[in-house]
Length: 457
Length: 111
Ligand SMILES: [Zn+2]
Ligand SMILES: [Zn+2]
Ligand SMILES: [Zn+2]
Image 1 (cartoon, rainbow over the protein chains, first blue to last red):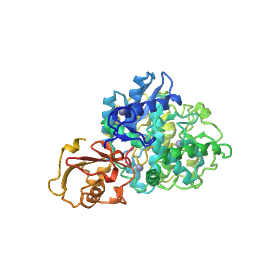
Image 2 (image 1 turned 135 degrees about the vertical axis):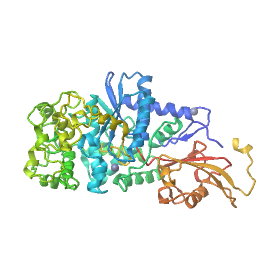
Image 3 (image 1 turned 120 degrees about the vertical axis):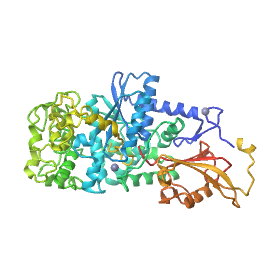
Image 4 (image 1 turned 90 degrees about the vertical axis):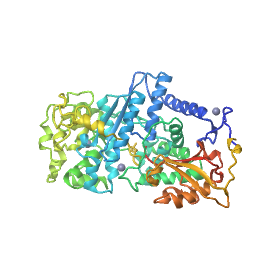
């Protein structure tokens, strides 16, 4: 009683969740690839000549994405230059294998790979963060940091776009979470196929309409090499519940996923007029896009560095209060203009976002690094925090721009991230002689834990 | 098709099959991905449904709710019967045959 393929004579191998149709392997490949191509072209995700970073975790979604991007770029002559970009959260015994997988992908697909680590960017590994804050809320840190880390890595590569492996299931899950949390601003963004405000590198989701089941089946039939395990730090994550809920719904009603995405899209359209969107500005400390005076990563880092890890976890205004910051809504300047105005962390006028293009960076390494508070030293006064600090968090941008954050955590020179390394040296022009960065890069990889595959959209 | 030529009636429905767990499902089975198992004779022919009960009682080390839910697999775990989507094979009612290869792939882990 074998079922035959709806498109040819062969034996069907899978039932499509989207249509209920049965397909043989070959027809499934064709349809799967054609649909992603269709998504890419109908949303005009790329322009010829662009460089694109594929956010690569070694997991199934990004592995299949890397495979497809490579394949479609060649088949349809998109004219794109592709990179793999990975984030190493610094989770011992968890990232090692996924890094190995990414490195194999690098070879299989012959794509250059760049790895950025939390340690380099923020001065803290996830292991260290968990040691400090315990297992509660760690995913908040992880999610916020990963999001910025990807951006910073992309800036270092100088790419035009980032593509992520978020699939239809992920998007639906995120819609549910945002509805349950009443997070209207995120609800609006999460269904967009391209996200990214002014000043940020656009992120695209070529798999927005691709079901997870098909991604997994594609990887299975094609024998693609991917890595899967649970993030050891994410038991009971909120997302996990949303996921289970979604899967339960889907088992009763197979169109649930696309229905929820559709609902999310409709809600975001109807919501647009009446909801006040926070003003997008940039973080006063690191220059990262933020609707508040300090970006979330900087607040979280400040908490870590001051020994107040709860900072930034709860209500935003409380955190800002604790930091001595006044306004909680957007700074007036837009990210764009601030970006041009230069480094917010010191007076150097270097671009906060200089990481990529302006590799010379700010030579003013004394700027913040010296009085940089912080760091682990918990005795900072609030006023200092208000204006002057450039903690590690900043890390990424401004820090990198100024080379300032490096000292803070005594290790990584943000400016040399990934390429040069963890020398603690401020001069961004001089490659680190220590090679630690490289070694580290090769040792760990990273990727998204699934539980939180950078789903912050 | 193929299966029909293979008469497996020998001892009261016992079957030898291969089970595979991947995509993170192996975490529930001591990280062992491949299990060759002999299902003992049974008054009824073995089906995926009874296989799940057997797995729960004999192979699952901990937290069975992460693998089975009610009398079926937890939503989000794909099941392949000789590489064919079980949704095309009768799902729980599928009757196991000698040398069948049943693959369970979790889609719930690792992105
Ligand atoms: Zn076919
Ligand atoms: Zn996590
Ligand atoms: Zn910041």
